[in-house]
Image 1 (cartoon, rainbow, N blue to C red):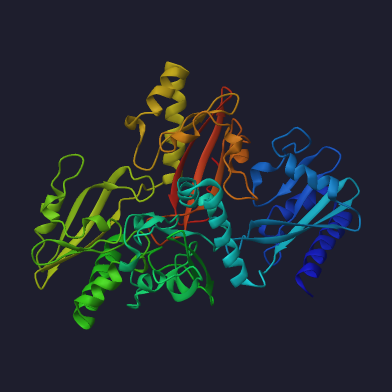
Image 2: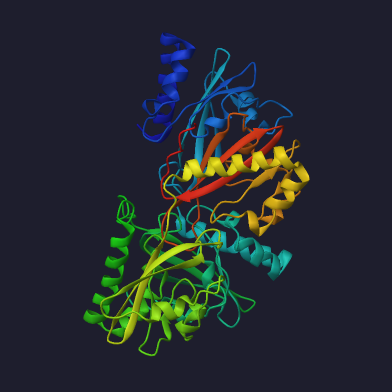
Length: 516
C-alpha cells in the first residue's frame, strides 16, 4: 500500500475499534503508544461539541474547545472539512520521526458525531527546485523590505523550513545571518573549513549572479550530525544568498555523550584532539576544531599555542589571537590564569561561564592539559540532579512570592537579572494571557501568549494557555544554536489566581516529565 492507503487503513482500523469497544476504550488505546502505527497517531474530535478527545502529540489540547471564536479555531475547521468518505487536506507540519517540518497529507473522516484524523509526511520530489525557491523567497523579501528586515527574519528560527535555512553573506564575504550557528555572524565565510579540510567557504564565496552549487560535509540543523550537504549560493546586489539540502541518510542511534560520565567524556574528548594533533599535525587540528563539526553535545575544544594565545575556539572565535590569561569571569575570578597553569599531568578548573542556551552564567568544569607547550582543554556544565523537580520548585517559589508581595512586586523581581538562576527564569502571563514577565525574551512582553508559535502546525502559546491549576508539562524540540546536540525544552506551566507561571529546563531527552 502507498502512504495514502496506509493512512486510510489506520483511520478505518480506529473506527472499527470504536464500533467494537466503545469510546472509553478507544480513548485509552489511542492515547497510548500502542495506538501508533508507523509514525501515525490519531486525532479524535467530538463534532457536536467541537472538543478534542485524543491528541497524543499535544496532550494539553485534549478537552479543549476548538470551535468558532476559540484560539484553536484553525483546528476546529477540520470538523467542517470532514466527510464520511474522507477529505484530504495538505499542510506543513513537524514530522514526529525526523523532527523536520515537511509537507503533510491529513485525512479527515466523519463517523457518527466524531471526526477521526491521521496523516503522513510527503516527500519533496524536486529538492533542488525547492532549495532555489527558498533562496528566491529570501531575495524577494530583500527587494520588498530591505536588508535589515531580511537579516532580522533569517536570523530567527521562524525562518527555518525543515532542512532549509538561509545564511546570508555581505559584499565583504562576512556572515550577517545564520539562524543555526549565529556565532559565525561577523566572521569571513572564506575562513570556514570543513571537518575534512575542504575550504567550503572559499567555494561558496565564488558565487556569481548565475549561482552555483557547492557540496560539502555540514551538521544537519536538527540532528547536528554531519551529512553531505548540497548548497545553492547566488550573488544578488553584492550579497550572497545561500541555502541547501542534505543528501544521504543521517547517522542513527543515541550520541556517545548522552549517558557518559561527563568527567570521563571530557578527558576522552581532549585526548582525541591531542591524538589528531600528534597523528595529523597542527593544521589538521586547527581546521577541524575551529569548525562547527567538532562540537559533541556541549563539548568543544579550546586551545592555545605555547605562548597561551588562543588558536582554537569554535564557540567564541573572537577569542582566537587573544591571551587566555586575560580571561576573567563576571565574578572577578581569573579563570584564564588558572587554566594556563595546566601541566602535562592535566588539571581541573571550576568557574562560572555562560550557559549554552540562556547565556546566563552557570558552573562549568574544565579539564586542561599541556602537550608540546600548547594547552588543550574542554569542559562540561554542572547539571542539577532532578531538573524537573527544580523547575517546579522554581515556579512555586515565584507563586509564593506573588502571594506574599503582590503582582507588581513579582513582575519587578522576576524581570530582573537577580531572579535568573542558571537556565531557570520565569515566564508570567496575566489573566488575559498577556505576557508580563520574560527576562530572556523581553520582546514578548505585552504580547498575547497564544501568539507564541513554534512551528506552523503547532502554536506553543496555545499549549501554555491550556495550563490548569494542577500544572502541565510542555516539551518541544528547539534549536541549540551553540552545541551539536538535539535539544528539548521542558516547560512547566501552571495557572494560579488566573495567572500563568512557567519556567523551562533544557536537555537532550525527548520524553515529557511526569506530572506530579
